[in-house]
Length: 61
Image 1: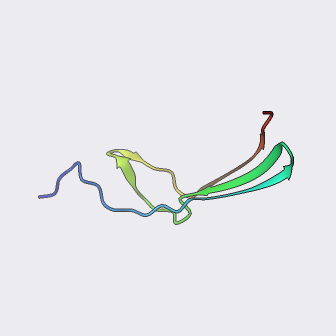
Image 2: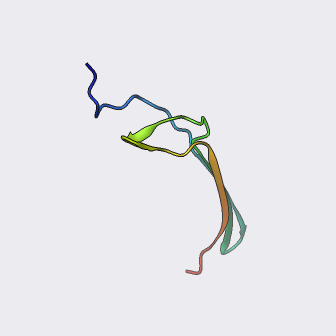
C-alpha cells in the first residue's frame, strides 16, 4: 500500500541568462522546467510544463 502523501522523485532544470546592456539596464531570459517534467508538489495541483519568460530590469539605486 502506498502513502497518498508521498510524492515520486522528479528533476526540474531551470536556467536564467542575463546581460547588462548599459549601467542600469539588464535584459534576461529564463527557462523553467526545461526537461518538461510532469510532477505535482501538492496533490491535484500539477506544475507547469516547459515555459520561458524574458524581460528588462532597471536598477535605479
